[in-house]
Amino acid sequence: MPIQLQECTFAYGRKKPTVLSQLTYTVPDGFTVLLGPNGAGKSTLLKLAAGVTRPTAGRVSLGRLASHTREYRQRVAWMPQAITAMTGLTAREQVAYSGWLKGMNRADAWTAAHTALSRVELADREDVKTKHLSGGQLRRVGVASALVHNATVLLLDEPTAGMDPTQRRVFRDLILTLATADVRVLMSTHDVGDLAEEATHVTVLTDGRIMFTGSTSDFLAHAPNDTAQGRRAETAYTEVAAQPSTVTQDTLGTD
Ligand SMILES: Nc1ncnc2c1ncn2[C@@H]1O[C@H](COP(=O)(O)OP(=O)(O)OP(=O)(O)O)[C@@H](O)[C@H]1O
Image (cartoon, rainbow, N blue to C red):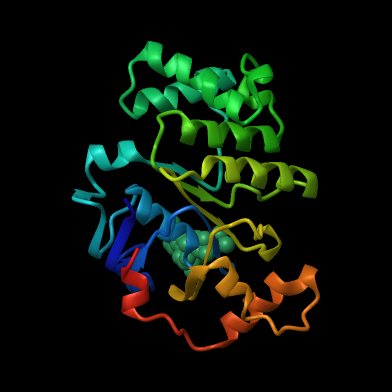
């Protein structure tokens, strides 16, 4: 079941500029890469979709569940851009705490934390205090925290920021294993190089507007035929960003 944003408008305060204006968007199935320049509104869109922020106008829902409900937040996991190492907690304790916050009992959260850390290949560091982990390891703790309660939608805000190319590759492979028939993954980045060709969908957000949303092959088709293989994503992105938005309410509102 998809998350739907319907005619969502949002500003960070009454006197602040509008970041999103009457935005309608359905989180596609599979693994979607959310692209856009700095300040486009990617984090804001993810926060609305996660239910951590409510739109000024409009509605965010998952089936019949509205985004401010506890049931909604139990099905949706959000990994913020900055992961904080909680003072005094080990990796396993920090992940278990996230599970507890999502309504799991302590024993289940403790077991699930180990499973989630294994999935991100960090089980061997689970007893290390998070403040002693590297930036990349802390991001994996962030993903494990998002995974711990078996959410059906994962919203990841620039999870590969600050990673070296090898770590990025490993991380993308991990994301691909997480996106299944039952789990949708929406991952923001402003680095087009993050677009794995294996991603099922691409959404491009510029200046708070959806410029493109569709399959990865449709996105890459925006690059001219003679584009070198390694530059197709970047070229397609430049083409899409330069065009007026071709997205209609029909394409945005359907699954
Ligand atoms: N807490 C805040 N208070 C006021 N304005 C904010 C706040 N957070 C973001 N903004 C503004 O909202 C707009 C969209 O920001 P947002 O972080 O959603 O963009 P983004 O696409 O995620 O950018 P980046 O790639 O740099 O992370 C920007 O103009 C930004 O300055």
